[in-house]
Length: 157
Image 1: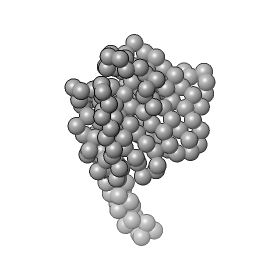
Image 2: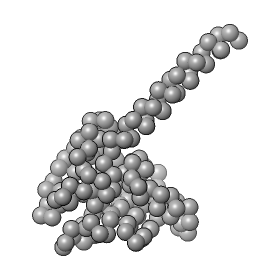
Image 3: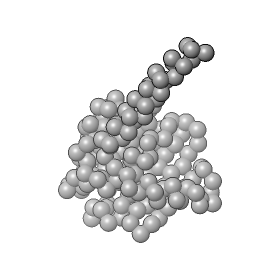
């Protein structure tokens, strides 16, 4: 019994440190509608490879996570993330990826008539689509008002 009591504070400290680390790491993520300057920090924290591709009206910052999941953040010339897409064997941290629009996602998921395999939410300012099955997830979210002129939502993959 005394040995268990001695171990409890250490276990609590480890759990607290882990939670603090998760909370601290979540603050660095670029999110839908936010400035994209933190994408490089995201890559370093997540040990993700980052590839940047310039297009005529926007840039695509692709992060390949250790899980194999690819997250693409689409940024306007003004530096705002107007869309995020993902695909791979594991879902990315959608709370961080969607930022303030995560509440829209959770509300839509709770009332989704299609179950867990496919979700489509079209709000006044945001569109969120997510689907898949174990080891094959995909999705996208974009802000209608920030879509650059001449860019179609079908380009966001």
